[in-house]
Length: 222
Image (tube, rainbow, N blue to C red; front, side, top):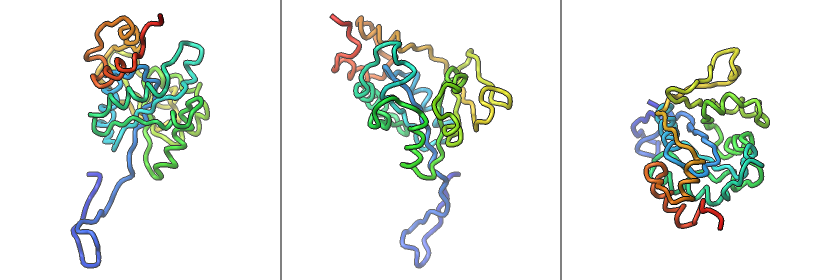
């Protein structure tokens, strides 16, 4: 049990006082979310449940440096609105604007550092897919991230997992692996579906679909 209470005694103002409270446990699940889809939410809620996290922040990248020059990215304010709509009915999963508010290129090291200031003493868990976990060496200020977080590697059945032990690509990390259902959902396909009027039902949470339609996102030019 993570929290224990003890009964009121004379001289103690509250009727029930907290005898022990463990640090707040926060998951950091960053992404472009262009658009957010049910696979993202499945990952977030399963990680939260498996690790008993107080909350999982879905951190919307302002300008994802990995995608610069690859394709046009939907404006950050629109992607944030999609995530806010998608998680509104998901207890313990929250949209975070921390990178959008900061502006510029989005680096995990900056986000982890800022969350450390905003949530002093919190235990931070960085959630990444197995594909990302094998490519962490390209990240900015990797040592600062490694020292501040526990890495949570999300694996899907039928996909190659990343070894966590010594000598592997995650050697030196505090790391755990969580298996979640395998949902093969492509953001590229979802953008194309939205552009061509094909159904998005059950692939994107309904509130986020409404935002896509209200804002005319992913419409074909011309």
